[in-house]
Image 1 (tube, rainbow, N blue to C red):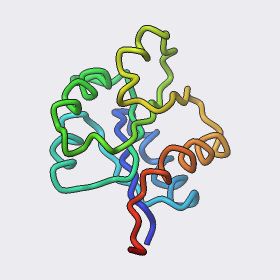
Image 2 (image 1 turned 90 degrees about the horizontal axis):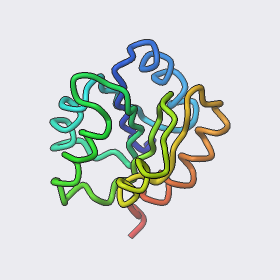
Image 3 (image 1 turned 90 degrees about the vertical axis):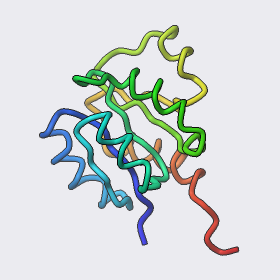
Length: 129
């Protein structure tokens, strides 16, 4: 069974491409087009990692992260920013407790795979116990 990954992005073409790419990298994608929908899904879906766009509307990625902080039961899920926006150090530092790394679009599949292996797979629950 492939580990679940949640991709939150309001760009439908990006979601469509990632629905194709992520399974080929060994992941079961949950694609969501809004931060609010993602917060609702996170009440019953448990992805191993979240890929988050920043420039979304009506809820930005930053607003999503603020709301995610209120959900203590989800604090173990790593977040990787997946965005075309350049992230300034002061922006990153504000969310350093939740954000593992930043991938600036366009992202090569090899770069995405490396980040997912490093930050996503380390969060996978141990199912052999």
